Image (cartoon, rainbow, N blue to C red; front, side, top):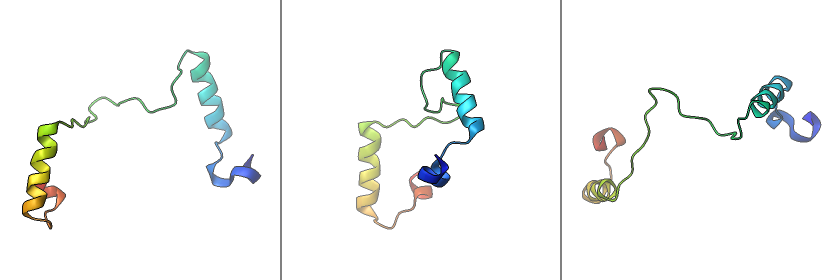
Length: 66
């Protein structure tokens, strides 16, 4: 597999870890949210507010928007 996939190939340790998880009932390979991790909230009002700020000043930075 390393010849075919190179650096994108999973390590043997990762294969063992995923096998263990699937055997224990985990069926998703996506990362689960960590405690304390921020989750983005996108609302139509927020989108409109950002669009207004950007239309007024195209050189606005992310820090200025937050």
